[in-house]
Image 1 (cartoon, helix red, strand yellow):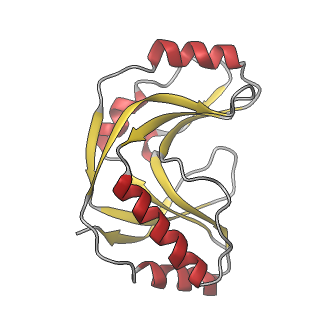
Image 2 (image 1 turned 90 degrees about the vertical axis):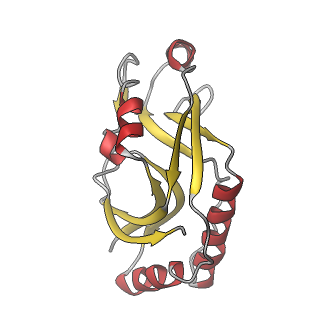
Length: 178
């Protein structure tokens, strides 16, 4: 039973720049740079028949131009119980439209709706029992940097194994944006 999700790959040069933020936060589990991505839609554990349906319906999306995405700082999820440190993206109107279209398509094949609000980001570290003060200090120290911009010319269907921290991720299918 595969665990699937769709996402935008992060180019190697952007991943290298983001990897410079690894370290300096006690208790963080850092994501490997080759696993950096922007999740569009988590699908979860599904059977092979549903996986075939997902692969097929994603191919039926409307054509879209490549997306220009900008990474403009660091942030965290979880408030007083931080769960993750991430690089945030901005100017995502087209990305939001792509995600909404995928949500509609995946519901057509019988997947339940995603309950979480779409917040485009690149997870850099997963946190468990890390002090919110330490996270705030880490972000204050590292959170301002020159914007990183790249063009995404496709989105992909990833598979992963159930593990702590995710990864490694395997590309099962790629869908061009052109």
